[in-house]
Amino acid sequence: MNRPRRSEQTRVALIEAGIEQLSIHGYHGTGIKQILDEVSVPKGSFYNFFASKEAFVAEVIGHYSQDLLGQLKQFMTGEGKDLTPIEQLRTIYLYSLKQYASHGFKKSCLVGSIATEISAESEVCRLELETAMRQWLRFFSNIFENAQKQNLVRDDMSASDIAAVYWATWEGALIKMKMSADTQPVKKIMELMIGTLLKNKE
Image (cartoon, rainbow, N blue to C red; front, side, top):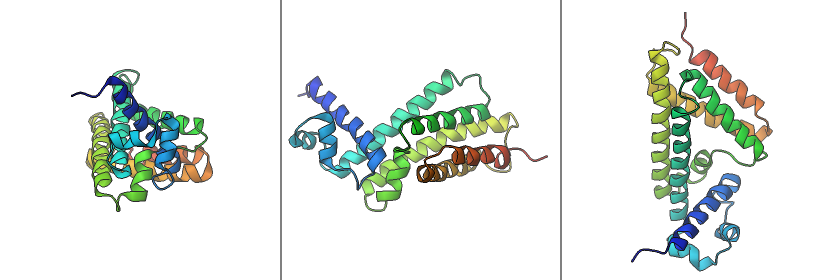
């Protein structure tokens, strides 16, 4: 028997509240009660949908990742369609920084935050994190592959290796952003990445 639509809406609401709370407080700083209070449902409702907090967080990671990928792909086929690969990269990271700043720097990349907290403790979450990272790196690898075809970035590294370095730099820069509550250091780091590491050498 299929669950009523209302139940599915509650499930989605719990996941969305989880994204919000985990992005701010992290895994260990977020309790089930915080999430339930956000959605205004009784504790029993949570365990109707998720076997445990760990299982819940794994689903949150998957939902967050797919939502972000959907936004990125929509950008690539819409507003970013006629931009160069470098302009696409710059637009994506600047938009992300604007979003973080609008929340008072309380939020950061959920996947990056969770990975540093519990990836070694939870196999189910680690696997979900790994899937998310693999999908994101594939997305950015495609951008760098197009950039190489247009002779915009170095070609002594594979597009996938450049994407890995780029993403690692981004995640590290986000840590600095949370420490300083300022986007300027991140912009400087990302522009150094784009302007030097990725630019073809004469």
